[in-house]
Length: 66
Image 1 (cartoon, rainbow, N blue to C red):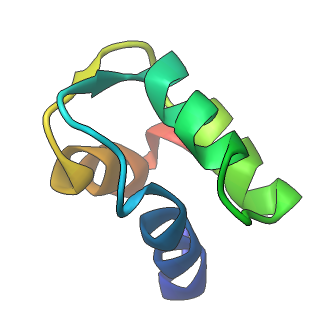
Image 2: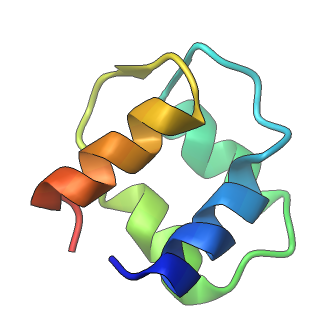
Image 3: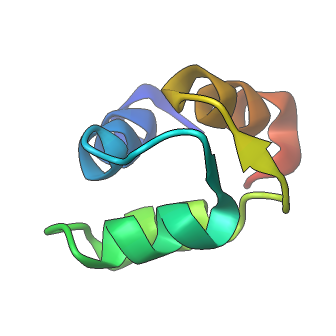
């Protein structure tokens, strides 16, 4: 994930309510003006609870999301 992709994910999720699970984040992103590629990145997140955007970023940076 490059910085442009992360910026798009962060923009799509900036108003999401945390803690949230993956499906909550997907649902939120679908209500935003997010590109298909951005939505695909969010859909590829592993199952779990995300406390904040930093949790999302860390999971993406760890290579769990391609």
